[in-house]
Image (cartoon, rainbow, N blue to C red; front, side):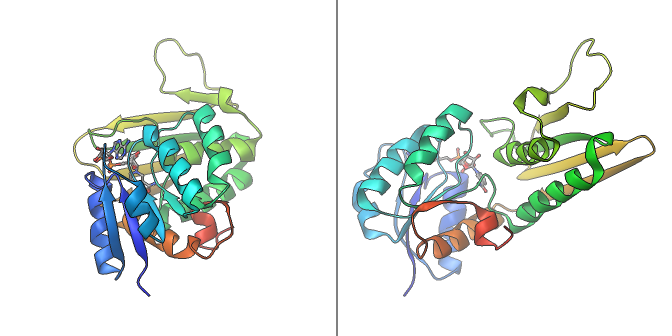
Length: 243
Ligand code: NAD
């Protein structure tokens, strides 16, 4: 039977991409809702909800999904750490895939970044550079935030090590800092580079997205997967078996 999905944030760039991908993948869109629309009714008719809207909408959607015991695929980014902690407790009551990036290539980049961080160690200065279109509302991107988390985990550092851009007399770079630089402009769908620079060599891992369809197809693959999972919060690494 064709999977029935509800799209939250349906009028947005990703909402449209998910609708197109669902059609191509033979799924049925039972509802596509946006700001102010009734979500409860189409939610009751779907197998899973796919959300690419605003971080301000996540709690409302999760409350409804928990009440109706509906699986959710969450793609929205921009939550503060505090906000995310509360939402995770809610999301854990239903089957939920929550990923800052649903592309298969980026999920491999996560795995490669972990491996490179572990092998290269702190002799190699780690910096993350991301670029997105001029309309993006949050920075750094959810994907960059995940890349940073991975580097911090491998280096046993915490968020105090992060340097969001640099300006003025910063002093020499220390080995216990990790830089993050967000570029915005034009219609760039999403570029991410993780750079490991040492004295004498530099390794750069780069992913470039040129079509939002990759996120939409990944999110729908996650929806297909999550409907047969027990309650819990999963990410794309689980869906792809990269854990
Ligand atoms: P967009 O601004 O084009 O679309 C967002 C849509 O959500 C708009 O139509 C807006 O009206 C709607 N919306 C806002 N508040 C809402 C609410 N309370 N209820 C329902 N709808 C609401 O943005 P976009 O480029 O489509 O991106 C949407 C989100 O998805 C962003 O957070 C973005 O960073 C994220 N994103 C994630 C991935 C991923 O792979 N996880 C990929 C691309 C974008």
